[in-house]
Amino acid sequence: MAALTRFVSKSAEKALPFFKILRGNKKFEWGEEQKQAFEKVKEHFQRLPTITRPELGEKLQLYVSVTEKTVAAVLLVNREGQQSPIYFVSHVLAGAEQRYELLEKMAYAVLIAARKLRPYFDSHTVQVLTNQPLEKALHKLDTTGRLLKWAIELSEFDIEYRPRTAIKAQALADFIVETTYSEPAESAGRWKIEVDGSAAQSGAGAGVVMTSPEGEIFEHAIRFGFKASNNEAEYEAALAGLTKLRERMRPRTGNAEIPTSGKEHGKGTTKLRSAIGPESRKHGGRRLIKTGEFQSKRQEKERQGGDLGRQKYRSCPTSVNTIATESEWYEGILAYKLKGELPEDKMTAQKLRRDSVWYCIFQGQLYKKGFSLPLLRCVTANEATKIIEEIHEGICGNHIGGKALALKALRAGFYWPTMLTDAQTYVKKCDKCQRFAPVINQPANDLQPILNPIPFAQWGMDIIGPFTPASGGRKFLIVGIDYFTKWIEAEPTAKIMANQDHRIGGHRRNPVQGSFRGRGGTPGGSRTAQLADLDLLQEVRLAAELRSAAYKDRISKSYNKRVRSRPISKGDLVLRRTAATGKVHVDGKLTANWEGPYLVKEEIVPGSYRLEDMAGKLLKNSWNASVLKEYYV
Image 1 (tube, rainbow, N blue to C red):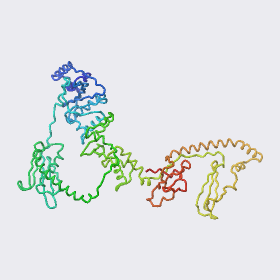
Image 2: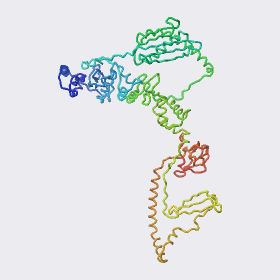
Image 3: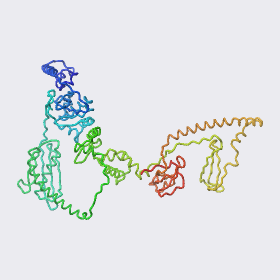
């Protein structure tokens, strides 16, 4: 029987008596119920329906049927008014599943069919034919729990929900009845509402006290923004009480008793006793007519008062000019939600229908269902820019980072698809964030080793000081270091001038010559050894060159691991580190870490640049990339 379930309508319901005796370790007892079920199965096997194969691009239909213990579905195709079954699906509900509500069972039946018939659902548009508000239950505003999970799982398929049509095929007779049971309606009991309205010279208002069937008391005070008589205030109070009761009793039904204060037959008093049902709408209709008159009078007064308040602006006519007509990101979803419009492209339409499950319309505004918050208001690109600007550097802004900025906008209840990217881009271009950004201590360029295998062929020069003045007023030190032997020469001087000539090491011996003179031995033997060493000098220099190159290569690799590349080219705007110009304490601890911006005028060598300020004045020194960073606008 398991092999023929595709051809058997409601196979789970037909085989349910067999499951009862086979489940668990019960004693096998074949009773009258099993005998009757077996005869029905044999009778059904004698008239199995003919199964049809769908063609590519055909729109399929799905009928579902629900009982207390099973759910079933049939997938069919309608060709020229003839309904032909494709596949029968059936499922026995477990203990917890049997306690699902009716709409949940209907949705579960569609889910079971989608899981078992996934190839059909992937390649065809499926119309679910049901008279139950299944689409509303899956896509409603407060969908939570299993319904929300099922709605997300079904959103990947192209599913349409349509009212049930008449079943014409004899093979589908089991699906004529959509459900064989109904859930009893729960009564919420009787609510008691006490209302009182009053009018005075200073204004009018109302008070509402509601008592639930459980004894909970809810109090509301209302002040009217319009002038009203005592009777009008009483009617408005009664209406306000009914409105508040409807808001609290929306998910359930019940009776309400509405007494008003004062004498029962006195002026301006009324006693309303109504049931929130069909009969109450008739009684409430007469009061709504009268209240509508009062409402129109109130609106007329407010309109007249508003016109008087706006008279002083009418002398200045205003005009609105359209700057841009670009479509917003949510216009396709909004058109589909309101009018059912879809793009002509099939893939785009399918994606839009799938994504629309995450959106809903509430009070005329499009919202996205979220995880951190139930609803997130969808905003335009212009509104998104203003929101980011206000959160980042508004009155309460504290210049937070990009991701924190996006999360704060999300917690405020806003949404647009590029929140994180827009927030990070805005923070990246913020002027204050760039000026007060932390100092970058990582090198900007790779280490450039200098290889020089010949002693004293290349020297490095530096000036150290000023020190405590010595004899002759000398307080500076000019230091020269040989790149090959690391030989050091130093010369003190009293001042440093551009046209000053300094001789370093002129009176000292050549270190190479000194090394040869220092050898021991006889004069003749020493001379011979010196000449032999000079013959081998080229080989010694080559070995020293190789050792030096290997050593500098190891140093370069270690140094380059810390490099944080900051590519800068001619014409870029850059900021300069404040400490590099000696202005690190100009404004105390409020001094910005970076100053500028400056324009890169010329790249002298890789990592060294000439800059000019925004007025076009060229700075006199060249600046290393380690004290510069790019400025974003």
